[in-house]
Structures are given as structure tokens and as C-alpha cells.
Image 1 (cartoon, helix red, strand yellow):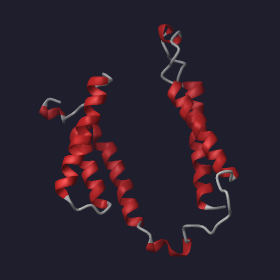
Image 2 (cartoon, one colour):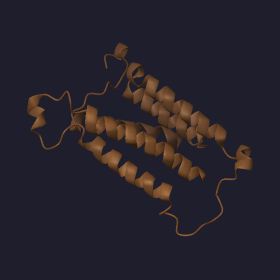
Image 3 (cartoon, helix red, strand yellow):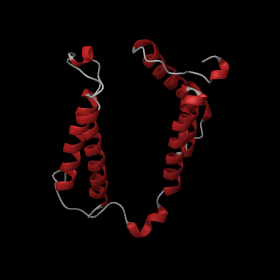
Length: 160
């Protein structure tokens, strides 16, 4: 089986578990006044799980391929690919998730964007820093002010 189908099989398992949680466990603890709402907190996870199951099934059954071609990844030459960058990005994602609450959204997201672009090979600091700061500030403003969802912007020692 090709790599894309193995990944689709793993993602199908994740979508099935996510769908089970969305359909059967998320709505049990809703208060009565929310049960009459047309959109519940589990609506978006339900849609995501169904779309994920459909997409991974299409990949598993091979409907997305119009012609059979040689695999793009040569498994005998994995050392020539940028596995180090991929592993460093995965580690950076884990560190970002762990630092999000104690360090605050603004600092951890800016650091994640700058370090992630550095790992991927960008060396123009005069571009990386403003882009990361503007993107982080924009996302924080939209989530905090427009959507009204509180995200700790700074560490607790700064009063955030």
C-alpha cells in the first residue's frame, strides 16, 4: 500500500474516533437551554468528522487518482529528504502547545512563527519579525475582541 493510503488509513481512524466523540459524548452534558439551539458546540466537530471520513475514504479507494504513476517518494532514499526539518517542526509544535498557557498567546505564537520560518530556511529577519507580529496580533484581536473568546495574551507576571 502506498504512503498516501497509509496516512489516509490513520486519518480515517482519527476521524472515526473524533466523530464518535462528537456524535455520542459531547452533547450529553449540555444544559437544557442549549439543547434547543439549532447549532450546538458539537456541530462543527460533526461536520469535520464526516468530511474527514469522506475524504480519507476517497483516498483509500483511489478515486482521486486519474492515472497510475510512479511513487513520488523513494523509500530507499529517505535520508535525502528534509526529515530533520520535519522533525524539528513537529518538536516546535509540541513546545508551542506546551508554552501557550504559561507564556501567553502573543509571545509563544510570535516565537513559533519566527522559529518555524527559520527552520524552513528563511533568513530575512526584517521580514520574518513584522509578518509574525502582524499575524499574531491580528489573530489575537479577532479571537479576543471580535469573537469574545479570552486568550491570555501575555504571561501572568505581566498581568495578561
